[in-house]
Length: 44
Image (cartoon, rainbow, N blue to C red; front, side):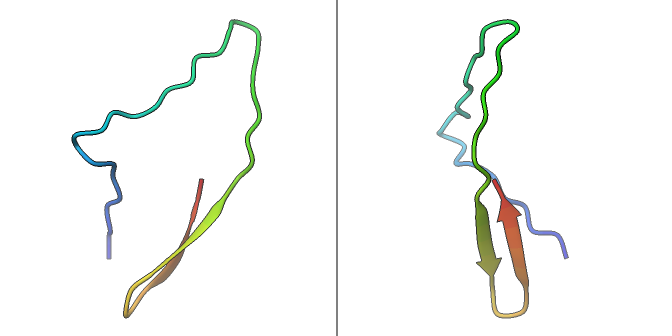
């Protein structure tokens, strides 16, 4: 079974520009998803 997740068509994705040669670090978030038959974890 495939479940497609997407953003609202009216909203634009947020992009974070980084200077050349620089980088940034962010924490991962686990988001549990479930319905009556399926369970999944989305990593952000």
